[in-house]
Amino acid sequence: MHPQRKKKLWLILLVVAGVGIAVALALTALQQNINLFYTPSQIAGGEAPVDTRIRAGGMVVEGSVARNPDSLAVQFAVTDGAQQVLISYSGILPDLFREGQGIVALGRLTEDRMLMADEVLAKHDEEYMPPEVAQAMEKVNQMKLDAEAASSY
Image (cartoon, rainbow, N blue to C red; front, side, top):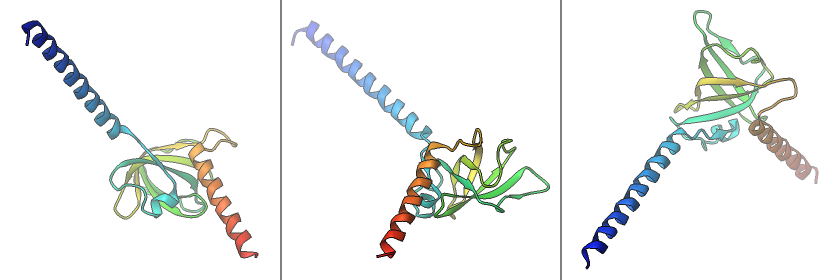
């Protein structure tokens, strides 16, 4: 093989190897930062991964908010109409947070299916609901209507 061709071949191989390493590092970094959304039904059903950062959302269950008087810790349940999941959060809740309203929490799921949130996001106004929560609620309502229709036959 001609020395000039050999030099070009090594250069091309180095460039391809460098691009491959860069793509592998980028995919690894992105995979660790992806926060997938899960509904309370999916969490209760075991679909959500344990000890991985996820987003969970739903409507705050009436009467479920329990605040610790000595700290900023709070526990509450969220529902999608079918299942509930308990969320624990330590920090200042958004001003718009209240029972019966839609929220999205970011955090890690424990072995007992409790979300240890490090961030809680509340809705913007009276009409707003996070798109994922709206879709989950719509799906649960459709399943209830289908079940009622099937039982009426």
